[in-house]
Image (cartoon, rainbow, N blue to C red):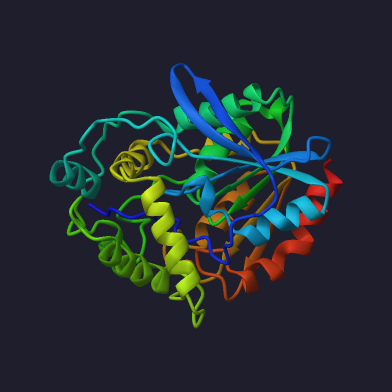
Length: 317
């Protein structure tokens, strides 16, 4: 199974140098590690990471954009990654993949709904009554649960490169991306260098065309993240939670929170038709399609939507 973090991927990252507070929240015994960038008096916004992504992998330029405009970014490690509680189940790759192909029910150790409660537990720990909510990819799926089940806790909703549909053979990544995601040649004995090279290969497929990913700075940051989360078996369990979930079409129909949907026209992981579907179903939503965006937030991509993002957040503060 794929053994390096999918979101080594949110690029343009130099870790923020400003001070921040860190700690744990608790969701029924599951410890969730969070980082609160502050400042305390600013408008809180909680950011929900994608598949295999650690809190350290949000782009620094996005965190800085929010802080510079009087927002208080709060990020956290989803369960089964980073410094949050790790689980121990070992999904049966062959059996589960056959069930996936034939669209048979899958069982996972936890659900996307459970992961939504993890995010709410962070708000509870920080005694935040309501916050802006931004989710990307799998984080967008989790955030849909947070917004639909806890509307009183959400001021505004931003969905980036996500979907309300359950991935299936009829609604799946391109073959090249799927093969990279399901690659089982990476094991616990694989070197950091080999894992890094595989990560670069994936990024070149799902990242912005022509963007320079393989830099000394990015390599250093990627290996630091591998060392921070040495046990990456949670990727398989998170993926199984996605595949075993039901679609959230009825859930998002009920979302009456102002919602901004941002998606790449050429996204090879979650196709752009998912964004159009969500826009149709969420009553108070606006859709932005970015022509040269695939699945990541590189600096040139952020430049194209940052003004509209800030307008969305400010108008709902």
